[in-house]
Length: 199
Image 1 (spheres, rainbow, N blue to C red):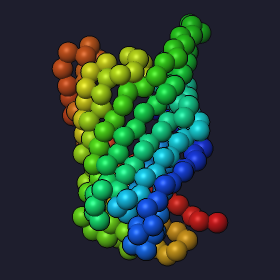
Image 2 (cartoon, one colour):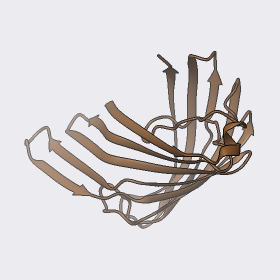
Image 3 (cartoon, one colour):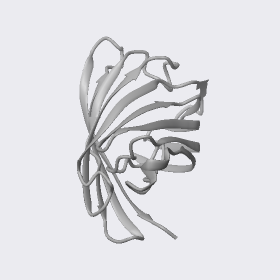
């Protein structure tokens, strides 16, 4: 399997004055890695991935998925805890059968996710940071972009800040995914990683 992805993001923050002195803002990019840092109490961040494109190329098929305005709202509720809600307003999937050339297209909204991120080590993002992020998904979207049944999982974001310019991220994850028939569940393990360089 080969995958490729591209994304763009914008973020807006609303800050209570006392929070500025406590920690610097740590943005997250919807659809990409999840940093381990936690935003300050009283801070609200609205982060939107303008366009997110994923290519999944299999021996017998090619699937292009485009998510529009994938949005995450983060609220700092304590020094080491933030609440989050995410939603994909629109997603488009195009699947082409590489044997017959037949094409299926689906456009619909995605599910809503709710979560709490708890910083266990350096929640301000300095040095080596570690957090836990349990979440649930609510099946409000279509069956292709969404899942039609409620789900949940746990992310363990890890960030290592090498200096003020470069930091590394890893996000191991385990979740309870619905089976293809949506009649049961199975555990799925995955991990994403990346590097961020401030220019």
